[in-house]
Length: 254
Image (tube, rainbow, N blue to C red; front, side, top):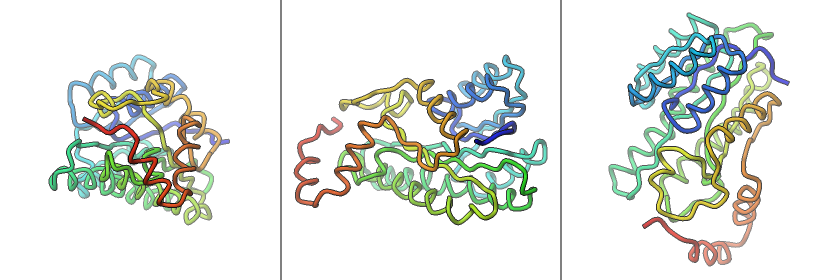
């Protein structure tokens, strides 16, 4: 059981899962929250909500794809309050697969995770072994198998899923916990734009509660809802001829 998760940094906290996680931790006794986002008005609203629970909360407008800016910001946050949990949550789904959109998706979803996780790991390595040190990475159920409806999004999430799973074992000896989160369809600015069916759709606060409890128990892969997790896992082990047949008949975005 993970304890003393008091000083928390969350990227992509101005809406969706990030916002819901910030509020969940604020309600449950977090001392310091460092939140980032790209929309100043939405982020400030989240900051105010968290502060009402007595949690010291700061918001930062920052692009997670900016390596130097992220390294500087994470170091500054850690100086104010030694971090216990760094949550690489920021992500995008840019819709039409244009060359620029593909680049933007990988830049945010992959490089943004690296720019969050890498400096955090270096900071954690210098902290006491008895300190709670957690890295959480938001991947997606879409990362289990390449999806023709969103090739760059599913590929970027597959990348960070594998990265987080590998880090979990490589950093275990240094008492750094790494947890990968693979949600299905959760209310966010991304799903608000979807025009395709979204089975087992979930509100962000419910998803945040599942993630919060999973991190408390140090579950390595927090994937939900279970019917979708089972479905994509099954498709991933089927022969290509069968999985291609099934995917070709699934609804696509319009």
